Image (cartoon, rainbow, N blue to C red):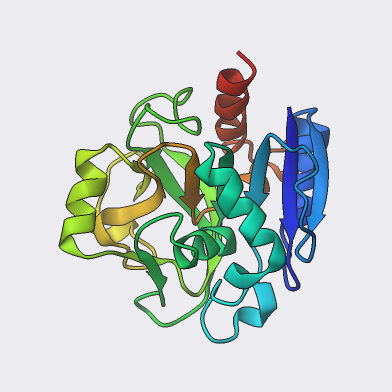
Length: 230
């Protein structure tokens, strides 16, 4: 399995992702500069967290037009796997690979802390290996993580089982108090209808190595590899 991690100006989680995929999960990793037009034979593309282009205009809005994104769009259209985390999720919504938008947090502040998320489906690469109602402690670090979509899109996401994760408390209960940013229905991650494009705001790569004192996010990468390497 060969993963490609796209590097935009302002990416700051690209090396974290490279470390987890390469050193923790023992997979091949290719770093892909945003100006390239070649995905270099990668089987799975990751858009990492950070502040692409300084988050000017709107988070992800400029990165969406990077040269490599046309290759990512074509790759996804052909069924290739794409995962966007935090800023990567924002880029995927700006590129219309995922529905909805990430708005400013409802408290209008940047939030950096550990939160809990729980899987909302087992029907995806990211969640198939995770126990139902499991509460995973995963860090967030964003100013625009408030997931929003109109009522029709929310109904469609629920109807098609496209919600991957929801914010919860340490017991796995989905409550208003456990929602850190105001996201509709506590949504922390979604996928597309074809189930090959995934976006989530929390950072599993920051909770996947024993040296970090938290390996709750590792199960997400294990879930991916258990399916694609089967």
